[in-house]
Image 1 (spheres, helix red, strand yellow):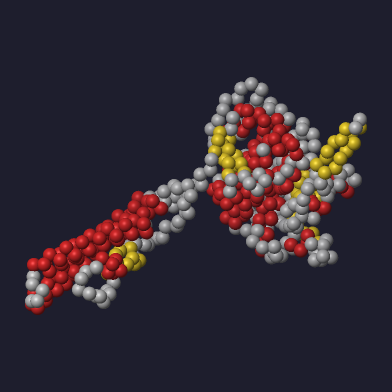
Image 2: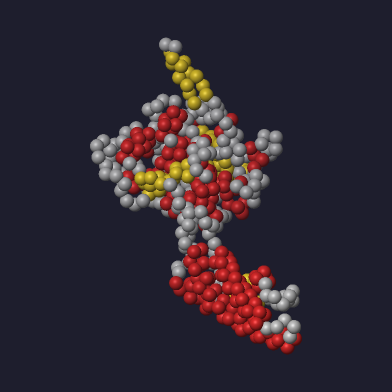
Length: 460
């Protein structure tokens, strides 16, 4: 709107300036300079001409500005790759108004004419109403990210990494699971798990949602009321949580977002079994974190209401890391991300929590003597994590969880017990600091599969 109006200001100013200059100069040349009556007559004519031009300016601007406003509004709501989205006011308009300034000289100057014109806001219900009828407002701004269609070669590689064979498919539990929030009044932050099997993915995302919900704006302790988010806020936290998972897997440099196009991108042939999900994917490459969060917020419905949001996230995090690096993370190259009964493996959980699909939960790397002079490298967690992990098998002496996972940056832990994942968390940020931690504290427990209807709070 501003650029169009500025163009009209300059055009109008130059036109009127030329009119006045030429008119005045012609009259001055034709009338003797030493005649007082002639000068008075000339000034009288100039004043009358000014009054007529004021009327023409006012009339012109009322008509012109309506057209300008419509054109600028159309431009404002056009789909543009990098423009900022603007909201459309209910009643707005503008016209050119005349502002009186004391005349500096008899000669009419172009600079003075420009100074005499200013933009003021007025009520213009008629223009706004007509514009609203012509456009369906608001048109959302769409972030355009480079995309490519999945092909059969990539689909085979993904299935081999996930299941160990391109002839395997996601079962119905995976296909029907998305990141849908609970309707229970005390558990609005909780993601509901429909069936068992892929609890590791859901628990990891649940933990990251809690991190965004509790500690995104500050590291201070929280009030329990923050566990009652609005629908819009918890959806935003879900988008930010997924963005953090993908950005971390991409080495804080890039991310790949897999979205369903509802159309088949290739024809399954050879040793490949179609499942109706991978064949429809479009892959979007994003290289800026701000663009990633915005893109996910625009498309979060595919993850939240799905129906295959869990699959989309799993494919996205694999491709963000890259298939090659995920396989390099394994202790054994033949490992996979989905185990027996379609359960998540520890590699997939670690990929979601840490950005690397390592096979163990202890600190750093260990060397195992395999005999005959062969050394097997066992890869663990190499730095402190945002989200922690606790395992009942450590109690049985079967495995060891390192302090990088036991003492995370935020007081949120995945808990693995009896083939089931759940989440423990606290509102007290100081809980992760041994020097500031109280001897008595509360933690909350959430299990998305436990038909939980109210919050569970434990005092330790």
